[in-house]
Image 1: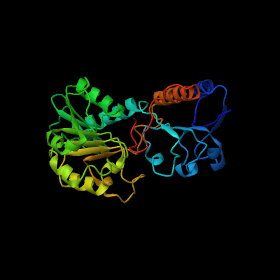
Image 2 (image 1 turned 90 degrees about the vertical axis):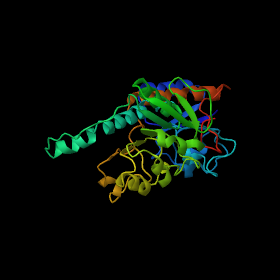
Image 3 (image 1 turned 45 degrees about the vertical axis):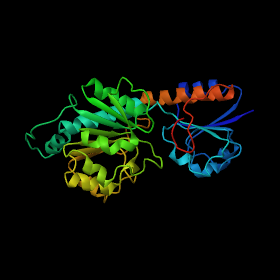
Image 4 (image 1 turned 60 degrees about the vertical axis):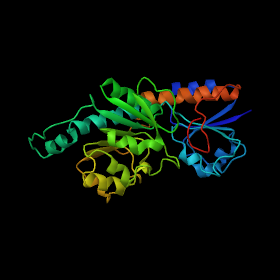
Amino acid sequence: MKKILILMELNSAQREKLEAAGAGAVLRFSLPDRVSEDEVQEADIIIGQPKAEMIRASERLELLQLESAGAGAYVVPGVLNEKTVLTNATGAYSQAVAEHALAMTLMLQKNLHLYRDRQRAARWQDLGTVSSLAGSTVAVVGMGDIGGYYAGLVKNMGAYVIGVKRRLSACPDYADELVLTEKLDKVLPRADVIMSALPNTSATRYIYTEESFRHMKDSAIFINCGRGNAVASGTLYEALSRGEIAAAGIDVTEEEPLPENSTLWSLENLIITPHVSGGHHLPATVDRIVDICAENLHAFLNGGKLKNVVDLSTGYKT
């Protein structure tokens, strides 16, 4: 009888859904900060995010179903046994993260962050012209579920959307053109808004360099709701402080939490949120996560096809 370890905070309905999907197996519920290494080592299937160091390439572990879309910590050599199947929760976070990125985009285009600063200082001040998504060019770097959702939102508001991805495919209806990631520097000078939804992989770390920002328009807005290590904090600070781009909104940073002494905190043309666009902040996201986990659990136990299988060599969904 399979032993299933579920490391998620769930309500009764969500728990019952997973219990139904795992019928015939032994289910144990815990949380990542409470579970013991012995419990991790005894599991045939784990749903959730155990500490990577607890797994230690367990020969018993057959399936690790993450509740996150990112899988970076688990594709490091030595964490998983080569026989372990890794699946993630791609698709669950697209609405929440894309809406957060859109909110940042509009705040920066309309100077709302600056007006809020002046409100606190009781200053009635007209800050002049603003920009619009209508008629603008938006580069979406990372056209997975999150990037695709954001692309659809801004295209519906009148933007011309350039999708940047690592493998070309047929252009979806929510984009106007697709470009390979290796051509990113050709796209950056065209974009009024650059939205980064990249995962954490060896190919995406520090993909935005000093040269990348020099390629951008000085009126450009940079949004990062993917992973913080896509750009070094110092590189972003220099680009913003020197006026190489107009503004940025980031939900992720190179180091998290962002240190109190980081120079990024001092920038008026930067909006920072503490990695809250995803997670469980939108209640509907948790329901989507549980649906994916339940579907994959049932499929794995009954010989069905799994969704969101992660390629351990790239960190991307296959």
